[in-house]
Amino acid sequence: MVCVESERPGGELLVPTPVKIVIAGGFGTGKTTMVNSVSEIPPLHTEELLTEAGVGVDDVAGLENKETTTVALDFGRITINPEVVLYLFGTPGQNRFWFMWDELAYGAIGAVILVDTRRLDSSFPSIDFFERRGIPFIIAVNCFEGAHSYAVDEVRRALDVDDAIPVVLCDARKRESSKTVLVSLIQHTMDRLDAMA
Image (cartoon, rainbow, N blue to C red; front, side, top):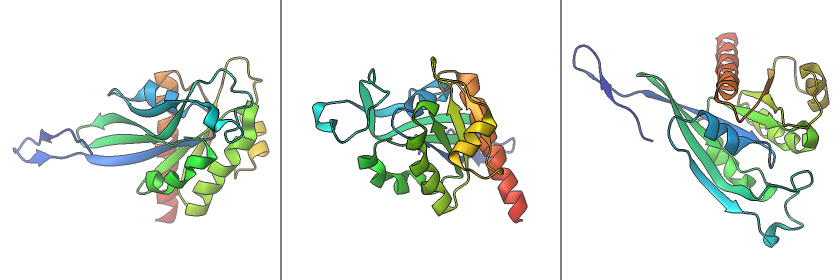
C-alpha cells in the first residue's frame, strides 16, 4: 500500500497506520460511485462494459441503463491525518465475482453495505457475508433519484437487521454524504470494540 510519510518533531519518520474499509453491496447499488466521490486520489477501477456474455447470468432488472460493471475491485484512499490513512476497497456486485470477497475483506475494520431499495433482495447476500465472518458493518441506503423514499426503520425491518446495526441514508454521488457514511462505520466499529473490552 502507498503510505504518506512525514516526520515527528524529533526527526523520527512517521508511517501512517493503514485502515481498510470495504464498500460492498449488490450489483448496481453505487459502490464505484461512492469510492469515486470520496477518494482523495484518482480511484483505481476494474470496470468493464456489460456484454452479452452476462445475459442470463447477471440480474440487471431495474438497471437497464447500466453500461459497465466492476469485475475485480475499486480502490480509493483518504488521509485522515498524518497518522491514519483509510483505504477503500469496493467489491464487485455480481454473484459470479463473489469468490473475491474473502480476499477483499481480509484485514478490514468494517464494511459499508450499500442498499438500493428498488432491489432490496440483492442486499441479503452481503449482509450474510459480513455477519458470518463477524466483520462489523453498517447499512447505507443509497437514495436514487426516482426511487420511493423509506424511513430507516422500514429498511431495517425489511432487511431484518439487528437494532445495533446502524442504518443511514446517503447519496453516494456526494462527497460529504459518503464521508458521513464512513464516519458512521468507524464509530460503529469503535463502539463494538469498546463493548468487547
